[in-house]
Length: 136
Image (cartoon, rainbow, N blue to C red; front, side):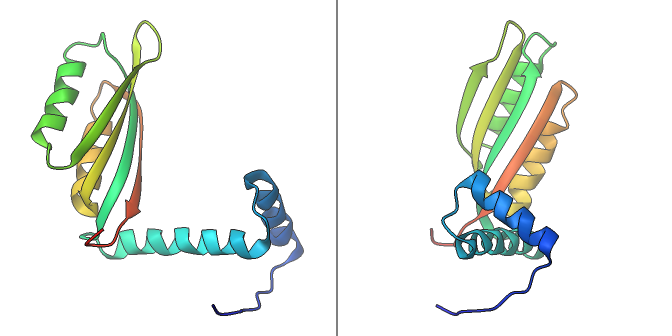
């Protein structure tokens, strides 16, 4: 393990300390290590679009909207090689939420997620992409 010295201004240090308290970090090193890993993962995703990844795609839609459910289900079947699992939750009488676990390369996963979230009947959607090792 390497030891480094970092200089942060008072405002940034206060934000870091607040983050540590909110998330329950035991010390600043753990918080900075976590943020460094997240930044490097984001850089890997942007720089290497063929990087293997797993992802969580979360979106909401009105299941009473004409053909919305069948269109979204068809999209998953059309990309069965990316979809590992899906969870369907009834939020109320009309609203549903789906959480899909995806696995593939960043380009394929992002393209599929963008396609699904851009469906006119999807109200909200977000994808979290986590790069993985090729053999993991």
